[in-house]
Structure formats: C-alpha cells, structure tokens
Length: 82
Image 1 (cartoon, helix red, strand yellow):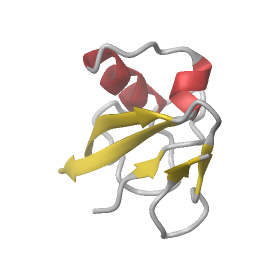
Image 2: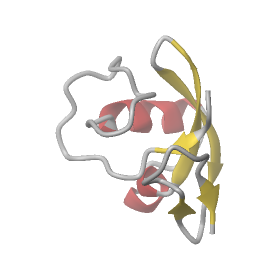
Image 3: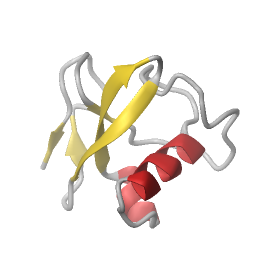
Image 4: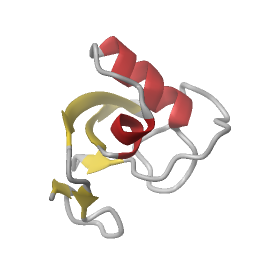
C-alpha cells in the first residue's frame, strides 16, 4: 500500500485498533499510540505532520516527521513532505 499522512484527526477516536489505512475517519488515538511506540513526541505538530506506512490489518507504523507539513493528502497519490 502507499504510505500516507494521516493529516486530519479529531478529538475522539472510535477505537485505537480502527483500520487506519483508510482515508477519512478518526484515528487520533491510534496515531498517538504509534508515535509513542516509535519513541516520538505526541505533540499536535507531530500528530498532524507525520507520515505512516500501512502494514496490513489496518495497522500503521511511523515513517517520518514532515517539519514543514505534508502534501498529497487529498489525493490517491503518495503523500510527501514539503
């Protein structure tokens, strides 16, 4: 699967085990857990501007932080860092 940034996350998450490899939806808790597992900060900037790889079963793994933001989040093309 293509890697992508989960750019928009809301305050409430339905489940941390939700299928985070679908666009749209609310995966904030899953993002925070994944960042913590990777030893990354969980501040709002890191949550909003990190890229993740889909590893199957709806799970994600941290890929990188885009310090200047992410692009490509509104398309089916792979996302990228500015």
